[in-house]
Image 1 (cartoon, rainbow, N blue to C red):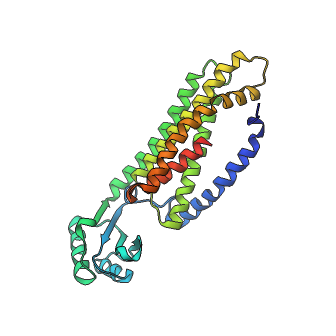
Image 2 (spheres, rainbow, N blue to C red):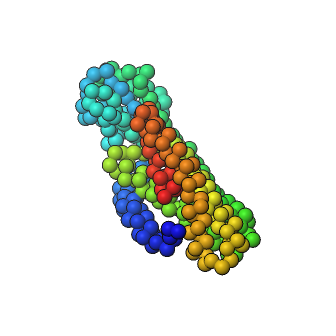
Image 3 (cartoon, rainbow, N blue to C red):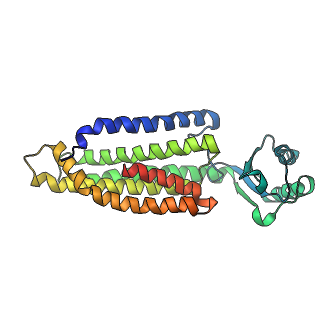
Amino acid sequence: MYNIVQKRHWYYLFSTLVIIPGIVAMVYSTIEYGTPVRLGVDFESGSRFVLRLEAAASEDAVRNVFEQYGFNNPNVTRLGDSSDNTWQVRTKFVEADIAEEIIAQLSEEVAPVDKAASSVDSVSPAISKEVTRSAAIAVTIAAVVILLFIWWAFRRVPNSFRYGVCAIGAMFHDISVTMGFMSIMGLLLGWEADALFLTAMLTVIGFSVQDTIVVFDRIRENIPKRRGESFETIANRSLLETMHRSLATQLAAIFVMVSILLFGGESIKQFIAVLLVGLLSGTY
């Protein structure tokens, strides 16, 4: 029988080496932007303009129009290649009527704006604080409920509380990998966490705990059957017995996500990439 559990310290080392770059990125992001990952307008008050211009324009020209309305030092980035003429502009919160004026001014001074292909997303400071607070509460409640549920479900097993603690530990392992990936991509490619990112994180938590419970349940079944074996041997046996089920379930989802990532629309690729990394971590 291949002994996975006996080599667990190597897996701890591998996980540490994967997580450390993400932690470094999150620390740098916190220093640079105030949060471990760059926040989108769903979590941070402000407005985001996605503007498709019908002619070539420079970054300075786009920025100058926003500065005319008092929005100093807006974050202006090009989306796609230069032939798309699509720009993203992040500013402080902009009222709807002012946003329309800015777009009209851009059309006059810089280049005509394709309104059918442009969008403006705005979140007020009050709403952004509420969304951020709700997100933190959702993750905290999920962790507490998982801990209590596993403790109750495995109450007949010795040291049942430890099962819950270990499940939470595995969950935070997957969260750390996913958050680190998002932080790195935020620094390299300007990715921002939005409502879909929260959806991806909660999905990763669900898959992570699901696989953990499957293994724990098999351990619970094997403990009375194999009283002469050490707990390490029972855990290893249970892991091997459930591995084919875990791989079959997770790989099916992973293959679908890779397909969407390669052939899906641009609007969901960031969401799928984050979810894919989380599922890969959970499967591992």
